[in-house]
Picture (cartoon, rainbow, N blue to C red):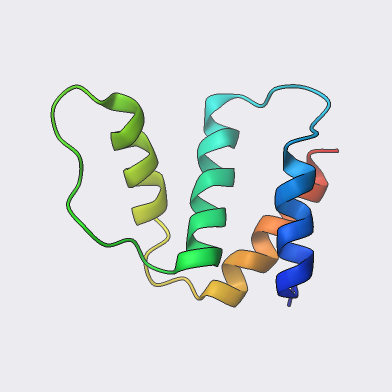
Length: 83
């Protein structure tokens, strides 16, 4: 499993990607980071026309029940695969 230090290092490294990832990749990065750092999402799904917030909520909510350690490990591996 990835250590908290490896997780944070991967988060910093994700900001140095050689090219801007597509939206699907960005949502996966966001969801894995949030699940790894905070655990399951709480609160209500955004409504209205804030499509970006809805997409982020749905991506994170899709990881509900995944353990934080597992999410951190997947995040580190995913970031590394982007280089």
